Length: 579
Image: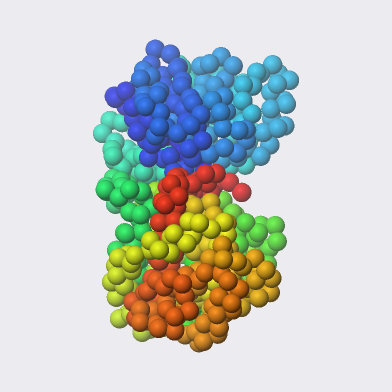
């Protein structure tokens, strides 16, 4: 969840670390800090956002250092709980992403041995254990520390009299960058893009030493080779490019993202694995879960392949009967619950397929088959283009399973998205802006689209929003309808169109205003809705995508009208690497 960055080279480390942390702020922005080593180890840390720090900590001296931007788990956001954490002597510093599950036991043991703890965090136990083992060789001290830790971690450690940064990974992402006489470490690639496209992905159980001579990686005590890979993302993709917010920029990138993802070649072995499976089980969280639900409706209808969709966060504790092929969907490739579900599936000898946006991420090392979305870096915490890319990948899979009969339709969807991006959402946003509660309703495949629309609205506006299958409103939620409770109705042509119109009329009869989203030229919907937002009159598969884009725009413009912090909604972070 948090962001970590390390630098070793000929430049001053502090400005490099501050710059990298700003690029990682979407992973956590409760607090930040850095530690560097020049003539001695020095550190600076502070509660709040590094993007608003006016250069705080950038003047620390030294050509080697580590930094951290925090999303709080153990201990409230404050200066003391911020990383880096130091040992009792002040000569060893670490930053950490993840959760140390047995930290309470370790802390009591260390306190009994005379260690003084300054913070409430689980992280601080790590640096005190390193202190126990440190006799001048930081690598050896970290190696001896790791067996004591239960849970997940990406760790960077430095010590005053050691010329190396030591990195270690277990169930939390960590990537190393290779520059021109300089070396980097980070929890994802965005801080590295300014300086290098050559990266090394560490695997679970790896320990790496970054030194002026290069990078050495060890696994189970033995030095191993981890080949460098070239990342094709460029730094411009991680900048706002003139847009007011990353979220709006990423919404406007969706025509290209959809086209690239729906057109990408898929390994024929992946298609055969789906065809040979008696059934599919898809595991995912949040937005990815909604994309998986859309996939279920479509593949069962178009390919007659039975599908179960399960929340990955429930999977570990309430494991359903395993089916032939388990598909894990995760934008980051690092979602802790989804990775755990995938590993359980492999333990049950199920075939596995991962769908992710990130080359070299954890899911790519676990799954038997991988399909990449082509979304590029997504910086806004609220997922938009990664959701559309996941839908595109699912449609690409279905198209391959159906002998590519949807080629013509799918290769024009990007044009329909471009049309939708020009829609005026302002009147609908005014209705939503004044609301305390908003309902999103749909039927069939539009039901999970409604769920995703409600999630986007609540994420970035802080307005309570719920998605419902339209027929379920009368089974309880009708009691909440009022003139102050807008209902966003997804009503495009299909088998349920007539009954959907009836549901909308029932809503209107209870006095609730209706924002209708339907095909351009739909007079019946326009007559019953208070506000109508049109999507191009194309194909049912296109409707799913264009309607979803409208819902993203509605959430964005409502949040903007309310003055919300759109890219960094409170209490949330981009990559959920803890359970």
